[in-house]
Length: 400
Ligand SMILES: [Ca+2]
Ligand SMILES: [Ca+2]
Ligand SMILES: [Ca+2]
Image 1 (tube, helix red, strand yellow):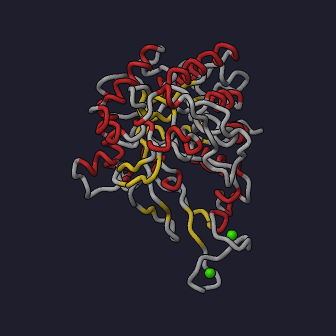
Image 2 (cartoon, rainbow, N blue to C red; image 1 turned 90 degrees about the vertical axis):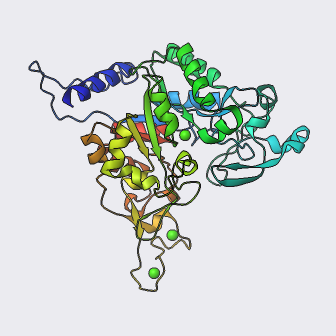
Image 3 (cartoon, protein in one colour; image 1 turned 60 degrees about the vertical axis):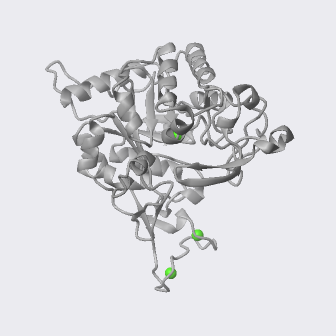
């Protein structure tokens, strides 16, 4: 256990030696007797979809921005084109993240498909487009209610290979060693179109081509499904993340489960319908994950949940900040769960998602300060955070 921690610390230390130049090396904790001091290591900052708070998701410009802002890893979500190319998009459907709707030549491609048991209606799907066709589209901001749309329709959809080439070129230019953390989206859906584990095999082929094949490679693979991670565990030494979703949090802070955030979809297909994602975070569930993965990526309320308040006893949640609407600002934090402690006890790292700066997404305890949220989770001992705002996560971590 101690040896494994030391090994992982050394590995991460070497990965980040340049990225964290100027910071204390918290990973070199042993004295000459080989005893490891309890100094916690620094949490890593994962640039969720690039620099999603600033630029449209999954663009080369966004990945560069994430690196510039200090990310330790940047994240491409992966879906497959009709001609079998891995491209960076959060969903197989692209109506919300590209300007496809304004391309009349693709009007007839608009259709509906079942994805993980949910009918996704009247949209355009990457699997119906060749890469050449997708290259005629441009990315748009998927959260226009919160974020700037000034970069809409400027940036192309990158392939995974272009993303890796960009990261490696930026690393060379800046003397950094920023890693990549690709997520395989909807493995079961892709298997139904392209064949079992074709998306996984193509990812492994590309990772190997660019030198990512070892446990200490600056690459980590994520998935919400299970069987594909078990398959990958038998095929590669690259570290694996079991993502763990939830649907919503009720007024008392309890996790809610509903499609498409009910359970890993491959469990549903296999008939394991007696369990939800919640089963993954019991001691038994964590022990099972430990047999094939290195890291868990839970939705952050699994670590620290929140509840509403009804001080005036009218049966409804109080509007704590008196702004006439109910959102995260009208919730108060509950004590932390044992998930981090239990995961660490068996050697699993914990990297929750997703941290965002917008005040309406921050519980009242944080008083509109996103750094207060990061600090809460860093103090809990998380090993990293997925964030849309890399610079804020880094500033909260490094005391700026
Ligand atoms: Ca993702
Ligand atoms: Ca009330
Ligand atoms: Ca309110």
